[in-house]
Amino acid sequence: MNWHSLIFIIVYILLAPFIGGLLDGMDRKISARMQRRVGPPLLQPFYDVAKLLKKQNIAVATSQTFLLLTYFVLMVVTGAMFFGGSDLLMCFFVMSTSAIFLYFAGVVTSSPYSTIGAQRELIQMMAYEPAVLLTCVGFYLAAGTFNVNEIASHDISYIAYLPGFFLSFVFILTIKMRKSPFDTSTSHHMHQELVKGLTTEMGARNLAIFQITEWYENVFLMGVIGLFIINSNPWSILATVLVILAVYFLEILIDNTSARMKWQKMLQLSWIITLFASGMNLIILMIRK
Amino acid sequence: MANIKRSPWLLHYDGSSCNGCDIEVLACLTPVYDAERFGVMNTGDPMQADILLITGGINSQNEATVKQLYDQMPRPKVVVAVGVCACTGGVFKDCYNILGGADTVIPVDIYVPGCAARPQAIIDGIVQAVDLFQKRSDEHDALVKEKKRKAKEGAARG
Ligand code: SF4
Image 1 (cartoon, each protein chain N blue to C red):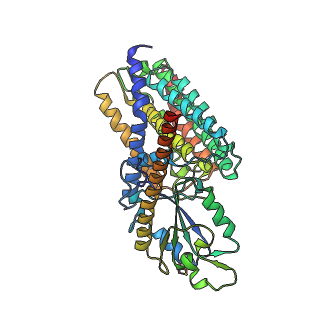
Image 2: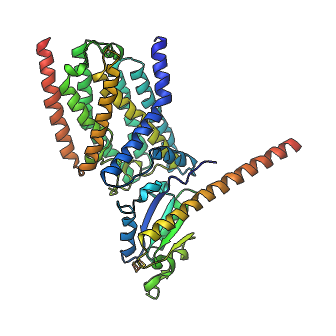
Image 3: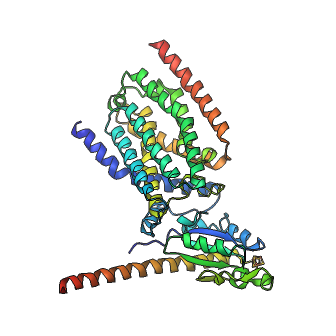
């Protein structure tokens, strides 16, 4: 590891929560405008987390804090590995491991609401995991390496070789970010059939940990989107930022215009899109070799 | 001292209301009134709520539920009774199963009158509740500080 990647890692660890929180605030503001409301201030997510940290801590199961902290640390490690420019495949494996700890944090309380929420989270993982793994394979076939640094310093943006993979990754992003058609596990918004799903039994401080981890996660996922666009030309950074913002806006739009989907439908849809878009792209790449 | 009044999360509980007040509470979140301007969120989870909004009176069946919801909320917390039913029992006061307003089982801080309470009045009640929420947090901080100071003095003397 050189000093270059060390700086990137430190910048990621320090700035990711702020960027993630701002994206979240933007999300709430734009959602409100789409519903013709004024909406909360841009910094609202930060106010929320500050308050959650301030409130009395009630823990249903004491091990939940430990499990959530493990989830948090593994997610930070995922992002740090990615922005430090190491192995892309490894990043996704660490991310899956961290998601398992979130599942445990849900079931450890043995509350029926959070247990069902956690089971739904597992189904969501099943829905997005194939697309995530295929994305890694796609990058390897096109670039001949899993190394993020080498992928990012190529002359041509990889989206030129991997449009199908990009499409399926953007699609599963909605599942990964637990946005509206696929928000079954946390019952975000006004859907409260599971109270708060996975997060029901998380007391104030634990919910804050969960929230901050989500910010880290979102920044990492947006980084992967950026990896499709970035190349050795410095101007590509601007294009990367623009594409990331466009994708995030698309997620907000989908979130606000679609109704909840059943998990069977979600599984079908995500696997079909993954198979078609990524599969076609994969075959073309293999033929070109 | 942390500024926590910008993020009040509500828990709305429907006692034995006629649903008139419930609809008005939900109206507060619609584009016309948009209570989310103040950071208000309707959570549905007592473990994450700051302000308990009760509509309708207390009857012998929901008495235990209301108590439990109140106990599950982390401190600091504020209770708002919305509508005359929640304040005193209202038109149902003399029914055989009604015990009275919300304050028969838990301490109520803010009373919002009206049958049904108007959205403007409810938002006004929430804004007052938010100030109380901040005040309680500040008082708690001051007590902790005082205690620490005393402990330090004690240690210095001892
Ligand atoms: S105060 Fe009036 S509108 Fe509200 S619950 Fe009671 S009877 Fe219904």
